[in-house]
Length: 295
Length: 238
Image 1 (cartoon, rainbow over the protein chains, first blue to last red):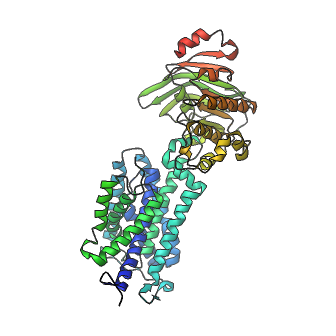
Image 2: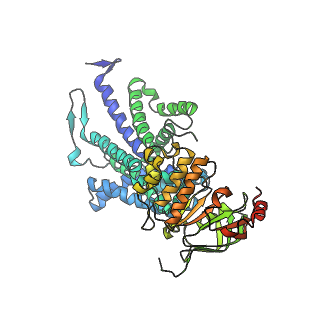
Image 3: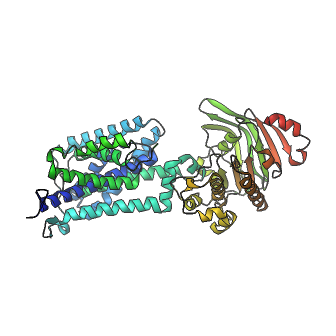
């Protein structure tokens, strides 16, 4: 058996794959947070709850309405995104321009309410979501076994991340978003409906979280707490990458997943803390994050 | 937009503007006819920039009446005012760092037909063409100013509010901007110019409004300028 630094190659690659999958979720979630923070200047603590809602929408849709996985992949982000827009219109708009703390408290409170209600309704233990038929099984690559669904998660997450990046950095709509992030007042003076842009942006960021939630449903248990656990790590990822950088969020998300995976192989005791150690180091050296602009 | 027999492109009556508790404008009245070039003169803090910002609804609160092409805008949200044909060039120029020169140029949506095309603008400002893929804020101050002007010319706006466009620029660029303004006037555009550089503004303008303490204190026609020189010097403190 091939050994790499005393570790079997298949174990190493297996952990790297797991790391890449976690990294895909980090990337999707931190991307949404970065977009929302960029335009709204709100640290969206409800992001984990919205991810959880995405998974639950898929789960409930399947069990009560017979909506299959592929439809849920589209409908759940749409539904939760619309819910996000309603939250922006009804609540976030009222505190726009206030101190960051208000947005943080409001979204954190929303997350607690939603997660608490779901615990009451569905219990803490959670339910499983069946793997879609077409994505069952896997490939034997010779040196390791690659489950089809995990490969799909990576491909789907990367596609959505890069499509989002392209939309923001290369299209006209994206130029509105970038300019609005810099100077929303002047955008109004050009005749651009900035309040609408803000609503759509929040909705899109929330939809990304819900999309990640649907992707996660077949591999992780669908539980009310699934988002809260993940969100803490995702915030560390965002801090490392730098708030407001699109590519930074994607790259940092994937990289942190991989680093976590590697740590599991070589020093498993530190696997849960390695990202926070990196966060501390980055904050010491580059307070604005690896890809962030110095304020 | 309802058709209007009005000759006035912009009519401001009893305009008051507030930033929080500060009362900045105390009843500004001014009228700008179609194709006119009018300046707002005055010392720093007289309320000239605030007048332009109030017309765009970018101040905290405003009362009074502002008719743009005959439409009352005092209750309009900020993003609808440009759609009446108003182009605003802010004092700080407002070039977006995260956008390329060309993206900056293409950013403001078209508000009326008859705006200048990209080719025409690049012909007017050749420097912008050469640097069209550069980051907007990498341009020199003069080039940024040209970009800020070109940006609103593309939209078809026929009422331009220009705030201190010559500030801090080299004489050769100021001269170039003067030529641009003459061309725009020939095209029939209406221009309100806030200007510190009186020698730049004087030969271009049809009329001048002099502001002090948030009010218009005097209106001077171009033909009377020489006769009122002493008064102006006293008001502007030059």
